[in-house]
Length: 196
Image 1 (tube, rainbow, N blue to C red):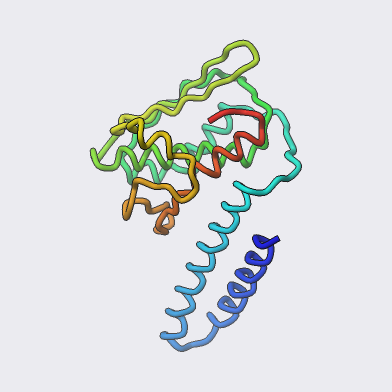
Image 2: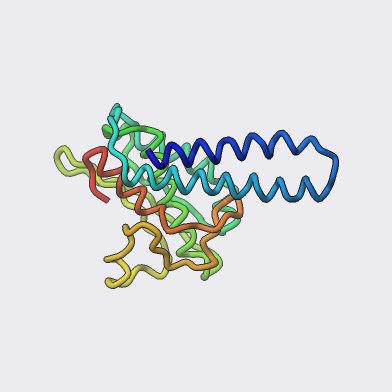
């Protein structure tokens, strides 16, 4: 309930700031731009928290893994170029899982962004996305040439707001990260009956 109220509040602020952008005053325009960016970030934060803590009906359907990954890689092409990350998709053609397409896409996107951040310090890297099947189970591996995660940190990666990135955690829109990507991904995968 709190998340809904906060999202409505943020929506009203965004609407007001958009109306004011037609005003000619440069100072007003600069201030409104800041308001708009911050409310967008606030809306994302509240939405992410809602994904972690809310229960809702999950609408599952067959999803083509290769199609989903190819689409994500195409959408992230500029981002991958900026991070100098080469990608290789080794996913079995025609492989299907039961999930919510858009939410599974978000999980994969979060994993891709984290992999790119992990490789940033080296100035380049390689991300290999591959599939593995065992009976009725499907595993999708995101393997990167980053520095890896030590055991102590690994214990904390799904805790909301936990991040090791500090100031480096900037998303594709230039907005600092908040340590919710893996927590949200974990909650989404669990809602499909999967594991992360």
